[in-house]
Image (tube, rainbow, N blue to C red; front, side):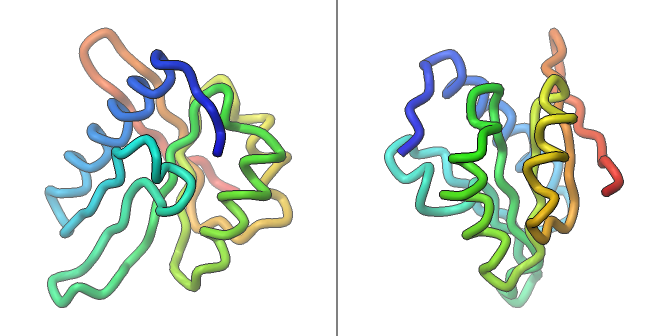
Length: 125
């Protein structure tokens, strides 16, 4: 399991919560905010009204945009058979694009922590 600082864990939980709140306007959403299962399940599972999985999402922090995370988590999530979206910090765009070249990523988003809000932006492939 990837060990992250309390600060990054808090950041991760804030970003997941903000994204869930955004998605809940349109979909049914399940979120994984539990630290000890962070490697097992994707952070966000989005469903339609009939409980069919539409897509899954994983939030990365500064220290989790690594080859190890790509190999242990992102590759597994990308191969589950659902569209897989990856959400990364803005500071890691270049590194993440290099890491995901051999993965099937549906959408790549970056986030920015603002003083009062978290912004998400879609990045083309």
